[in-house]
Length: 470
Image (cartoon, rainbow, N blue to C red; front, side, top):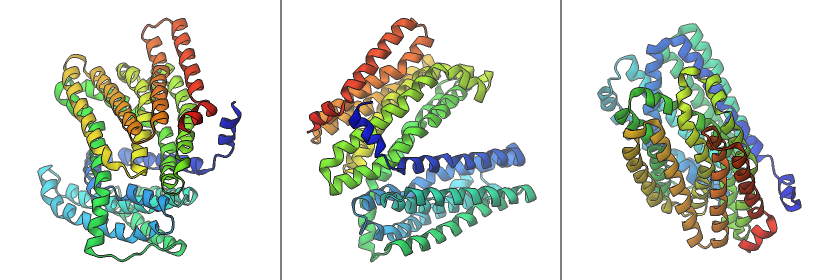
């Protein structure tokens, strides 16, 4: 290993490990939902699943990008940033008021009645607590206390599984189960607020002007969140309307597999976001080195996973979902390589958010969504789920290439060009297993992959990379 690169990994702090453990505890939630489905049965679980889906959409308006904003503000200024904590929590409560008022007619329109209506309200209360938790977690991340964040998340998710699970087994009542979940989250939030107040100042003057200014600052984050949700959900919606129902099922399995694979780069981005923000605010000259470090982690840890998964995707689908879903591999052959490009699109997205350029994301993401919709409308009627996968690949390429081009124009010309080269080479490397499975000669595939990896090594040489940015 190149000495300078080796030294970077030797100095690597435990933030990435704690972030990984934090993401890993999502397994507790997955396990709880699995038990919930088995005990409640299709009808009651269907009510819960539908209410949760509705709550997930409405929670975007409750959070309004505040958790991302406070993470950046705390990372940029650890002394003053945490003072906005209570103000942001108050904003989230105020944001939830119109949601709660509109929920009754909305739930009725969606045919939530009786038990379903009560579950909807409880789920929204749970989402309010979740929004508050994300804001507090943002403070911990901004302060660099990833260990504290991981412990708090682990305790909360463990208590939800134990207490709500106990209520589930004893009562089999969906209302009492969700009410227990809400109670656990409320107690968790109150204890975290108390703990955080003992560690740092979390209060500042709150008035209508300061609340409005905070909302205006958070608005680009909120809009970006809505556009991202639309971007990643529109494929399934259009498939349902333009293709046979089984195509939607196959594509859904492929998308869920990609979401699992993206958990690893998401860990890297959770940490790099705070590091980018801190460097940009305090030591802007170090920002290229932090970008380089994050890129190293993405290339070294994510690309090999994509290669292995690419060769083993048939085995993976058959083991996890069964032979009935083997047709989803046709979509995975395209979606797995798209991750090789997606990691760079997400990298530049985090760069814009962490450096105060989040307003750039609105036209960028809106353009990508439009391209995605047009591509889906053209390809799905002819190719079904494969067409949706191709549309996703096209959109990921556009998002990454345009985003990195904007990064070049923002004053990072050399590093932006290096990242464009790396993104293209990573896409090629990640695509080779799929191409081989689809008929490409093995020897030719190995040659192309070897040359592409050699190109990545050349671009990632520290002396070359830093010479370019220096």
